[in-house]
Image 1 (spheres, one colour):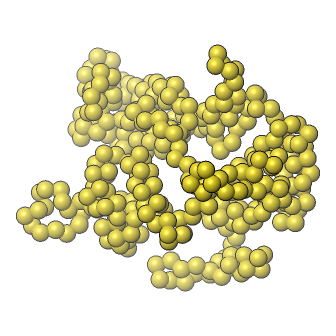
Image 2: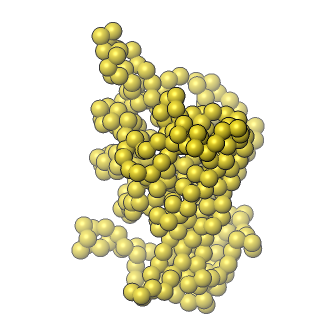
Image 3: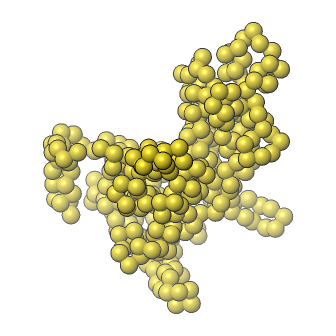
Length: 343
């Protein structure tokens, strides 16, 4: 396995029909890094004695064997092991040390800790913690403080770099950032945080407009740049007076619980093609604007060029496609395509 992986990393790559030699190793944070981590850390569950069995009462789905003492949650090289006691947690540390050493890895002293669920822990930008409520103990998952600060910093830095730019350009750049964080956070307890983020962005946009028109009053700025949302409602939202494009409110993004993937259901399994296409359509609809959703439905959620599913990992863009002259004014020439399909 190691030899194959080493040869694979050194064998070069193809880009637009041209072969290029691999001069350096894969960068940290590169798109291939999670795959490499999954290959390197495969077998961690077996090391901890975690096994699964079929649940014949629930459509032959798989459940964790009740005899297992540990639960492992892993994404690439970030992982959490859940145990019932502190002693079990410490034993996990001793079990994993030789396992990681065999792979040339070791646990980071700064990131590795044993904590009680009532104190909570952060994982992939979320805070997982058990709270005492009137209904008893309940587990809540929320965007972590660090994750929220990172989002605010990105928005603040963007506005600083774009100081003096017209509001239409500001909205064009900020909307994908707001949508990206909102889509990532929407599957957990985020409603209040969405409102807090909206207030912060609202304040930063107001500050930007005051800098843009230092001699104008707030009344003039409000009358020029704020409108009711296009989809309805009484709230006022920053709007470009020329293009009518509006700033996205994070609170407009609907809170939805994550659709779990059935155990062992792989997108590479040809017998599950219909399952994954149906799931991908749901994901596309929740992550895109209404206009793009309408285009996707007209196209059967497939690229207008290669005819493969839109949700295949490639970036999707709207493209003017050649159509008969009498249809040009009807917007039927707008199609969703994979960006690489244009080249």
